[in-house]
Image 1 (cartoon, one colour):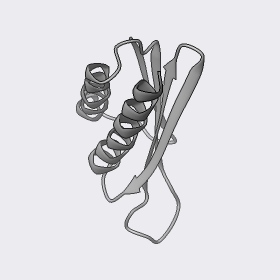
Image 2 (cartoon, rainbow, N blue to C red):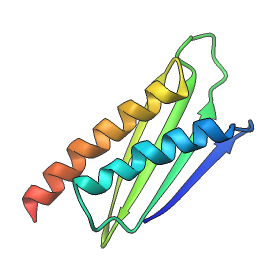
Image 3 (tube, helix red, strand yellow):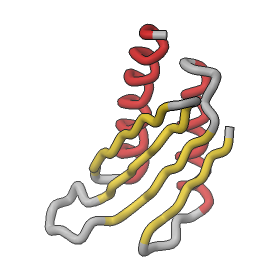
Length: 96
């Protein structure tokens, strides 16, 4: 599985990138035919405390699933996004 993590308008440290990659790798336990993952880390310009945005796109054969979550920290947003993707993968696998 090819995992790409990109930070938009800031430089993410290695610990944050490793955290996101670690969480995304766990999705393979729910669906083992994932071809790739693209994730984007972004800080939104707003007065709201929940301005950390994580977008994750999972590439499957013939399909893409996507999750986008805001939170106070990138770690929390990544956890919420991966959980949303996990639910989507379980539903997709049931339909197959």
